[in-house]
Structures are given as structure tokens and as C-alpha cells.
Image (cartoon, rainbow, N blue to C red; front, side, top):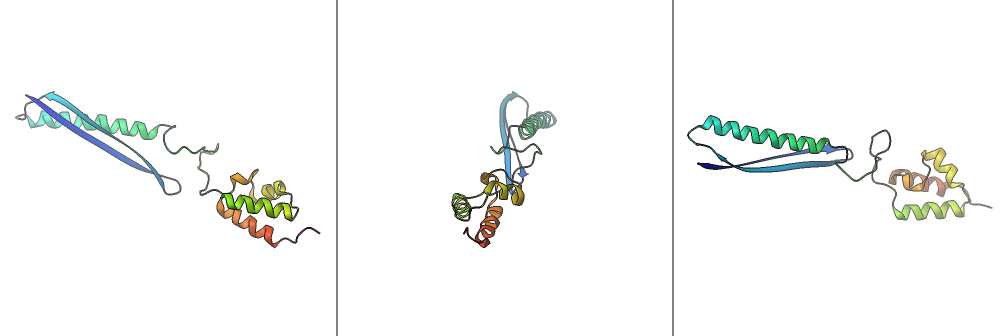
Length: 137
């Protein structure tokens, strides 16, 4: 007698900065089984769960899976959240008005080569520092 077996498996894993990603699969097969042989039914269900688990684990271990964020060479995600557009405008305006070599300040104080690499915290500190500098004569 045909029996329909339906098995699902789902798993979620944590990511840096409170993120997560997950994968799930659902398998449904029709088998010729006798419900009078519960051991055989359990064995078939167990095999489906093993297949489902293997598929989910393979998906989660893929290198290209996960958030669409460029990872630096060290493999760590950059701190989030990144600088806002308002902070970008403020830093550019302050550095121009106070005649500050922005590239040098970024490199020496933030270890960054561009404003877009700054976190919001770094940008906030830089704005405070630029505000505290005397203006150009």
C-alpha cells in the first residue's frame, strides 16, 4: 500500500552583529510500505531526515551563502552600521571649512583610506574632533 512520507528540517545559525541565516528543506515521497511493519516505516523516515539534514547543513556551509556583504581578507564582517550620508556631508564640510587634510586624518586616527569605511561611531568621533579644531585663519 502506498504511504506518503513528509519530512522537514530547518536550522538557523548566528552571524556576527546579531544577524543570522538559515536554511530549510521539506521532502515528500510516496513509498510502498506496510504500516504493519513500524520498524521499516521508522527506518524510511529516518533516512529522509538524514537526507534533509545533510542538505540543510551543506547549504549552510556554502561559502557563497549568507549576507551579501563583502568580507575583508581576514574573514570578519566589518562593524555595522556604517557611516550615514549626513555624517559624510558633515565631515566633508568641516574638513573643508577648517582646511584639514582629510586623507591624513582618516589614516592616522581611523586607520581608513576612505570615509565610506567608517562606522557611525568613528564618524561621530571624527565630527567631534573636527568641531573642536580651530578654524583656518
